[in-house]
Length: 174
Image 1 (tube, rainbow, N blue to C red):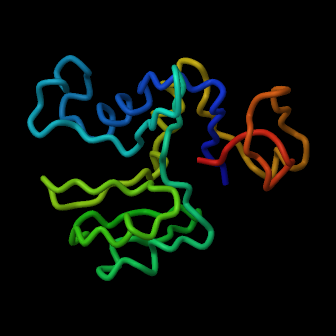
Image 2: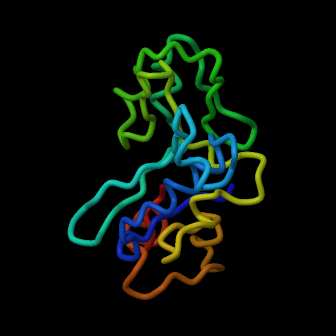
């Protein structure tokens, strides 16, 4: 299963991923100029946390193997699909925010105005995640972790930090 990885050295906190996600996933018009004036405003399933001067880190669901959010959800709104993705039955979400409290990565986002939680579903059913496609610096990439471990994918030297679970250096799994 392919996974979104982040190269924090390349992220400039431009928020292109946030905008692409919001416009393509929850906008009625699917076009930025019109989406800016929609009510309610389109919501993004990824958010960029600024980490320093001209740096950022996109945060989205990591679809954990041992996902604490699955057990914490009293409404069973969160579930795992056949591909291994942790997805949301939106209509079941009761807005209790238990998933928000237990997620070690801060991926689920509570939205009080709609009394629901939103999280990245990696654009399931689409050709590619909009956040990855829109990243101008290629800080977000969609890769197969097994291919990296086998050496089938070459990582840039000195970049892609955080791939400790595979090679001891490289990408950060998002």
